[in-house]
Image (tube, rainbow over all chains, first blue to last red; front, side, top):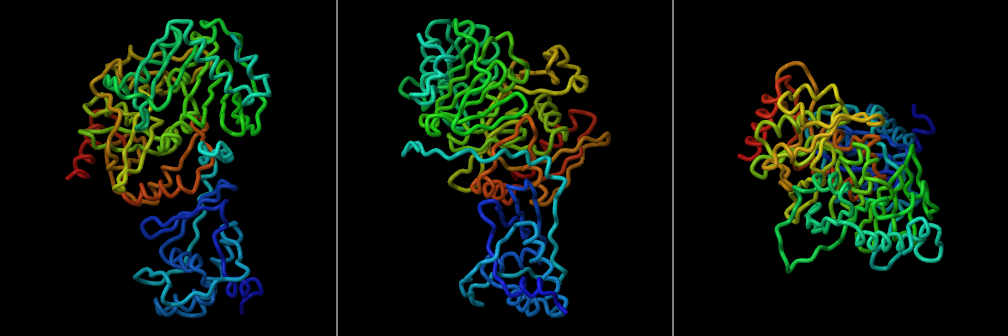
Length: 147
Length: 358
């Protein structure tokens, strides 16, 4: 049985927690950086599938349905895995809930990884924290407007 | 003539920093001045160094970036270095009031004039970037007081902002090349970036940098790499690795932690200023033999975003982050175990460059 938090994660839609967080797709994996916390994360192949669907507006239940259909994996396990992953991305401040998500359709769903289903994993590279010696961003200046 | 210490207290005009740049330009006309047109991160820059002693330190660091004489081409910006004592100026301010101020151990960065001027103040130096024109005034209290770190990288952390204003991105990494094809060497401090760069320099490859270089994305989606400084620094215990250049190092004075080498003084013909980046190397110091294995783009990305206290940069923008991602997606990356023998490291790097070229 799922917890109330898990049910919230499965029902809600999310977006990238900009501007503090930036992410990109690198050869099938997702790298994510939380600039405010100076932390760095990676998502494996299935995690990257989940992330792309989250970024395209799917809620947790829709993502789980697509994963089950694509990989033929056990629905209960997949729903639990997706709920856990979404909860972790929220916990680390990587995404924020969207109040009124735009409807998504199967036609626009991102392509998924080929191969076997493995529980999606968010890797936290905590050893990177001291190496990301970022200072706060410089105030912007536009030479054209002079502001 | 107004001096910088008067200018910084002048709150009426540009927070005083426009006046500082004017004062530096005027002061530079009063003493012996050395000029050189260089290409910095792809942009033409007029380098002006006022003061013979300061020029003796600064000019060799940029000499390899010299442009051929082109009377009809004017530089887009000027970088002026000024020996303040030689110019008869007063002591530089230890700090300045700014609209936005960031302070660290012995340094302060601040903005002035509604963000137009960005200044970096350290003990004995004040560097000011005019973000409207891209020009720089770098004032040093006295040439003889320069640390080896200042001699090696006289524009300090302001270089990253100069690169940005040139449309390039400063990277904490080394860069070597062969026939214009380059390998970017990345990883945290102490991982072997400098060791790899010097090994290559002394064994037939071109040197573009060991710790601070620039990249620029071309319109075709490839990446060009640029040399910024013709200098390299290592901890004193490391110099024994290269017995043939043992006498060429300037060993650290009290207050410095690293020895300085100006590669252009020992191998001017191997100093390059630009290349196409075709490989990324992540070195690892070992006692074994050189071994290179291809690694994942994500591992390459992780090594690329490593930073250090010395090269610490401002929070990267999304554009810079995505540029790093594109670079690691497009460029094969190799994890390299370094060899105890420098020639073997250079041969291994040359093999990688040959492999990615064919």
